[in-house]
Amino acid sequence: MKLLRVGTAGAERPALLDQDGTTLRDLSGLVKDVDGALLADSAALERVRAAAASGDLPVIDQDGLRIGAPVARIGKIVCIGLNFHDHARETGAEIPSEPIIFFKAPDTVVGPDDTVLVPRRSVKTDWEVELAVVIGRTARYLDSVEEALAHVGGYAVSHDVSEREFQLERGGQWDKGKNCETFNPLGPWLVTADEVPDPQALAMKLSVNGEVKQDGTTADQIFGVGEVVRYVSQFMTLYPGDVINTGTPAGVALGQPEPKPYLRPGDVVELEIAGLGRQRQELKGA
Image 1 (cartoon, rainbow, N blue to C red):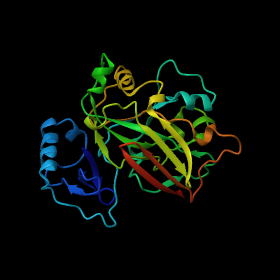
Image 2: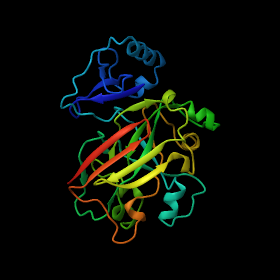
Image 3: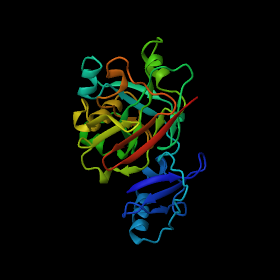
Image 4: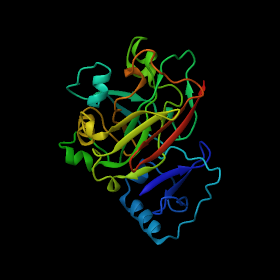
């Protein structure tokens, strides 16, 4: 299933993308929201599947409709840095021996087509298309990749926007360059795990002002999705609705020759992952 949330910011309602790939169906009469509680409730998910198959769910008028982030009330966003071989090479970094972990605050999350704000005094705002893993079952101390994948509720497109000066040149941890307002567009859909049989076979692409910057695949990940979930569960408990951003392929501004083409107000970023949908953001000044 492709689950999503539509409506004005803060007042989204749950919806489903029909099998025709264009029609939206209203789920608000069936479930309260698309969140960790729903993902952890197999009976509720089966009711949604049955209702979707029946074709009886109300159709949503999409005229002027905003699409919000597909997951509500995210507990935490765990991010994996330098998780693509080609991205590590382009930035001159050593291949990490273990996953590099940092965090984004849930309040960085916005809808897939919402405005992204370039922070005040920013000169190095960068783009990163990423595969987001959404946890579906409570995970702690998982023993294997197979067990870890069984705890995944679904997948989504994530844009891990970064301010590289704040991140790398201002001291301390990466968090200063990762947690600016609007720095994590998510969606459009939460695609349930049964529709993604191999998360290591997903094409990823990002363009800026119509020019392709990133064109990669999750096959190039250093640590695959199952290993990332297993590894993270050794250090923290993952709850339904938690999100893991699993890294970005080569092509970010940081890895390009001088003058590096960092983002500016007025730029338009478009990104997609095969089977998971597309995003489009226009940048404005904060």
